[in-house]
Image 1 (cartoon, one colour):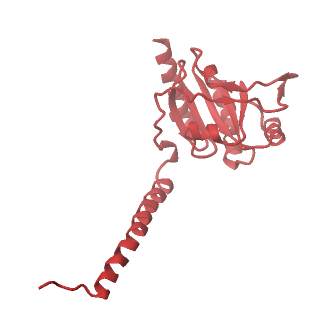
Image 2 (spheres, helix red, strand yellow; image 1 turned 180 degrees about the vertical axis):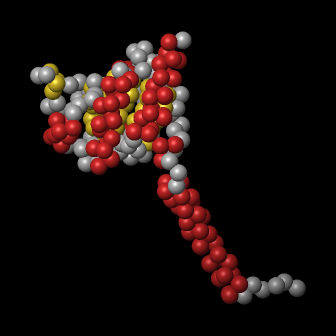
Image 3 (cartoon, rainbow, N blue to C red; image 1 turned 90 degrees about the vertical axis):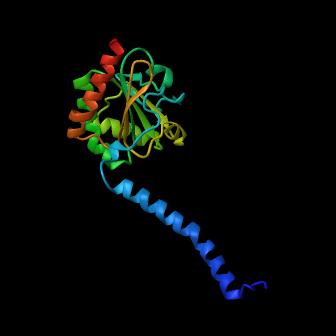
Length: 200
C-alpha cells in the first residue's frame, strides 16, 4: 500500500530548501565580517607573496613635476632591476593615506629604497594637490584611474603597501595604513630581509 504525501508535508520540504541558500549566505557573511573586524587587517593573506608582480602599466600622474621635470609613471618591468623597492597604493580622498604619508617619507629616508606610488581612482588635480601639500616620497607616480590594476594586485582598499624584491617578486604586503609600530616591526625588517636575499 503506497503512502500519499499530503500538501502540508511537501510544502514544508520546499520551504526548507528555499531557506537553505539564505542560511548558507548568512553564515559566509558572518565569517567575512568576523575576519574583517577582528585581528590585524595587515595580516590578511595574499596569494601573490613570492610571485612576480602582475604585468601592469601605470601611466604617469598628469601634470606632476619635480624640479621642473615630469614625474614618470612605471610598469612591472621597473620593479625587476635588481633593487628592492616598495609600491604604495594611495588616494587623495583616503583619510588613512594622509595619516600614513609622513611614515612613507620616513621609510624612504631610513631604508633608501625607491618607493613607487599608485594614485587610485583619483582626479589628476586632486593627486597633485595631495603631493604638493604632504610631500612626494615617490620615485615614480602612476595612476590607476579605473581600479583594474589594483584588482590584479589583489588590493583590498586604500592604502596598501608592497615590498618588491630585486627580481620583481612580491616579498611582503601590508594592508591598511603604515603606523610607527608597523614601520619598525614589519616594513623595515621585510625590506632588510628582501635586500639580504637579493645579495645572495
